[in-house]
Length: 393
Image (cartoon, rainbow, N blue to C red):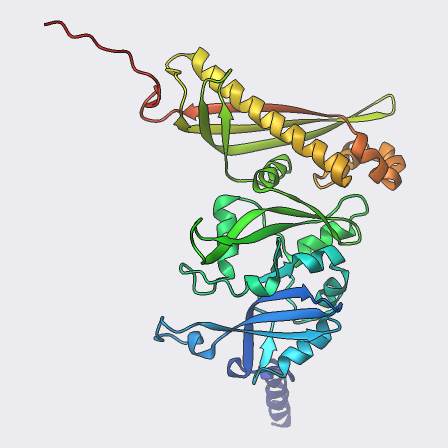
């Protein structure tokens, strides 16, 4: 009998261990949920931290959609923790970062360096390492958090969605940015947004996803890639899922645009007599979306001319991109280091400590292979000149 009672007591003790909560756990109605943050540098060298906090009424169903769904709160501090502490004094609830989707960084702070704010992100157990980072070109993060979006409940999330549809590029989270940073031979990059007018004659502002920001090993902003250059970079790295290519056909034969898919990329390092060079092969399938040429596109010869013209456009643009990065920024953002380390591990041991000096002078050959699978409902352009039809009476 005593054994049965003892077993029952032990069972209750074990069960109670699994039913207890965390000692510092707060209920949902005691938290201020942060959806987005922004960090800027002030003129006196401090940090301006801004949080976009979800209003509690929007956590339940059946609420009016006409009300603003968030508030924006800012505070200044000498570092991230002090700014966060000062921000907390303006909230009646404990702010919680576990649901934060996006972090904007102002251009001024990016130029000064992101090292200090990254240290806090790594040490703070509440920080969400899957949050996406964006640089705000020519503007501040606090301004970015004030831009409305009529299509989204939370405007800051519009940036994440637009990147998917216009760029097809991979995300850059806190974690992936820091993983690029710890590499001794390559440099990290971040996606870029700009705040632009909705239309040429409008005072209303909106976001524009506009490329990639390049950082050096001190995590300081050194330059930008525009949207097209950033997309080609992702093609090189085999992480792009969609993009369009507009190109001149032949010698002044008009413009055409193809919608590309089924992307392929090969980065092949070649070491010969101690000299390193690269051959980059890019491939894709295309759908003809627009044509201003007088080509009939009824014969393989004319279709081949279209494909060769598209390949020439890609080859020229990618060659120019790589040359610009090599000579203006001098930092490897393409993963060339990883390619040579995999294929030539012994030679890489002698290169890795001097990669910053080697990278700008590496010859790179570009090859492109594009196959146009679909030309649309008509093989002849509507814009092509028509022959006059003579009628006999």
